[in-house]
Image (cartoon, rainbow, N blue to C red; front, top):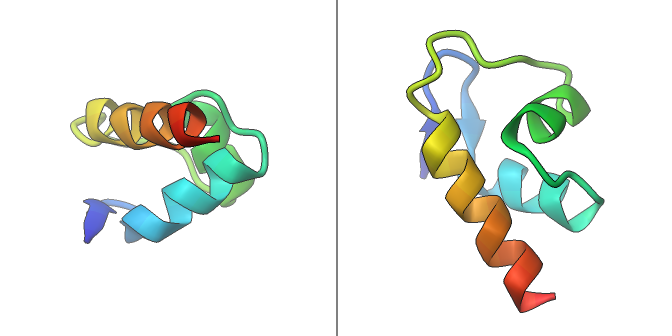
Length: 56
């Protein structure tokens, strides 16, 4: 599933970033070499990161 249309970031990318230590959407995006543009994806990315951290 696409999380961020502006940056073509997929859910799996965000999950991977969370597993490697990203605790916020901005950290996850930076780890992918990108940054949020319009910001509509940030709440969804945050939820994915929170789910990954809870499962760890």
